[in-house]
Image 1 (tube, rainbow, N blue to C red):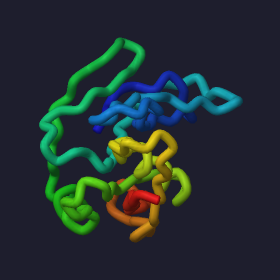
Image 2: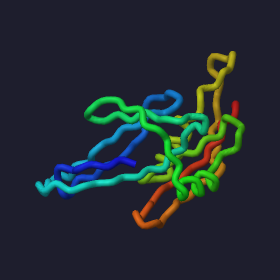
Image 3: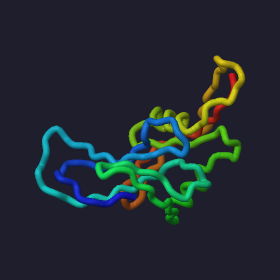
Image 4: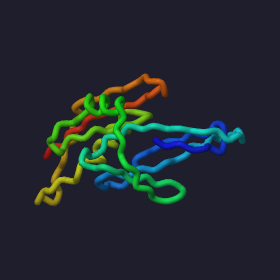
Length: 154
C-alpha cells in the first residue's frame, strides 16, 4: 500500500514490478500522467497484491526519493487471496499478477522463475499456464488478473 498526494487531479499512482530478473523481485512507485493535466492536488492510496517469496519479511520499493525497504504486511483479505492463489511448493511454479492483461500476468510469473541450472548451454525451458483468471470486487474496486505458471525442462 502506498499513500501520498498527487500533483494533478487526473494523475494515477501505481506500484509495478521492476523489469530486472532478480530474486526477490523489486518494485517501483510510479505516477501515470494524462496528456492533459488538471492542476489540483489530491490524496491517493494504492494497494497492490503481488506474488512474493513467502520467506521474505520485507520488499524493496523504488520511488523518486530512492530505494526503500518496506516490511510486508498481510491483511485479512490478502491472506484469503494468497491462500486461494498459493502455488505448490515445487519451486518452479509462480503466480504473476497484472492490472491490465493476462499476458502481462503470465510474463510477471515467468520473470519470477529462476533460470534453469542446466549443464546444457542451450537448454530449453517450457512455461505452462496452469491456472489463470481475473479477481474483481471489494470496496476499492479491485481488478486483478493472475496467471499460475510452471516451468519444465524441454
